[in-house]
Amino acid sequence: MFATSPTQVLRIAPDLYLRPATVADAQALFNIINSQRPYLREWLPFVDLTRQASDTALYLQTITNSTSDKAYVIIVDEAVAGLIGFKGVEYFNRKVEIGYWLSQHQQGKGIMQRCCKRLLQYAFDGMNMNRVQLKVAPENYKSRNIPIKLGFTLEGTEREGELLNGSYHDLEVYSLLKKEWQAQQL
Image 1: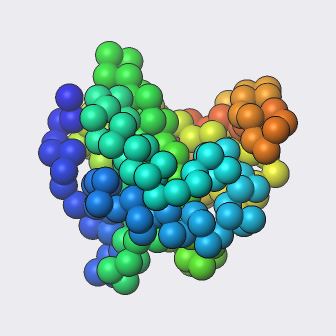
Image 2: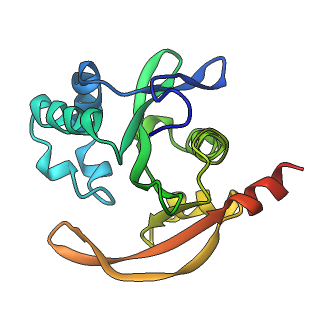
């Protein structure tokens, strides 16, 4: 299904790269989630459901076996710092959504923007996608800045699109088309 190997490492900089996630990453990812629960749970609905490393391992096993999802661990200075990947790949329509989260200690350094940019390159050039979308909570300003800085277009609001901490929340839907990406690369 993937036009290039889904097991390849996606290099960004000498100290930053994306490596395909495996079940062996469960403990490192869980440690970040567990130590940063109050911070991460503000925007991530899975945090409260992740009670032990085996919960993370089950998610990674599911992702590993999926044909429509693909996850990469974000490696900063040779340490796991978060997760980024493709959700709901539609090969026929050539579209996909990117989802991500990053350790609180690595935020504010431009890491996630660079990771998203690298995943966009892979989606458009390696997977031959035509459309990539991101969904973010309108109040999540850090995350919202990523699609804006990368040239995405705000398409609208998915009303009450996410159940988070017991309440439904809106999500802004941003998209970038392959032709727009190519124009940016000139």
